[in-house]
Amino acid sequence: MLKKWVGFIGALGLMAACDPAGGFGAGNGNPFAPAGVKQGQASVDGLLVGHRLMEAGEFELALKAYLRAAAQHGLNVDVLSAIGSANLRLGRLGQAERQLREAVKEDPSFAPAWNNLGVVLMEQGNNGEAARVFKTAFALDSGESAEIRENLRLALENLEDPVYSEPETINFALVRRGFGEYLLLSTP
Image 1 (spheres, one colour):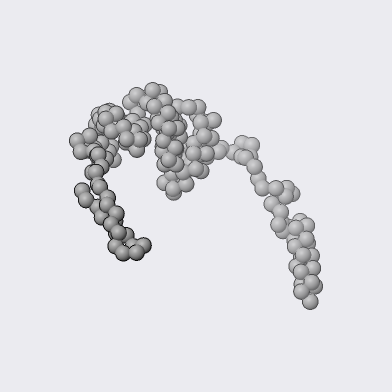
Image 2 (spheres, rainbow, N blue to C red):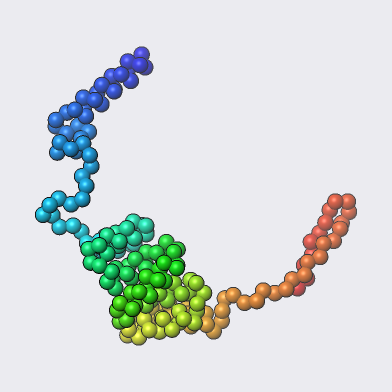
């Protein structure tokens, strides 16, 4: 009985796939998914798509959209900064740093690229250079961005009181307490 049902469902699937009204096909006579943009249609800007994907937390897809934008716009400051930001969010700090440094070379007055470069430098532990970069971003932005102001504050705070300091030396002593039983003691 089960074989009859499997055969019946398979036959229905074949008939639906051959149906000229659409069935499983794309409806245009082509069984494959559409590729690219139709002639005469405008494509959506890769930067816009990438920015929306970044907001949605889809950093890998955003990076791909930014790379498509590079093919459309060239490697201008917006594209370089966007690619660097996506790599920053993906944890690729070395790549992000290179791309953001290239962006600030391309346009030294672009505050978002300076800010993101500062974030990369902070992540790498380069607090001194990060503070200098955030000061540049803050000056270019005229202090209007709360994000840049907060990043500068954190960088200056880290310069004054670094989070990582020399660890305390702790001496450990192992004390035997019976047969096969030990106690670990620590003394500062």
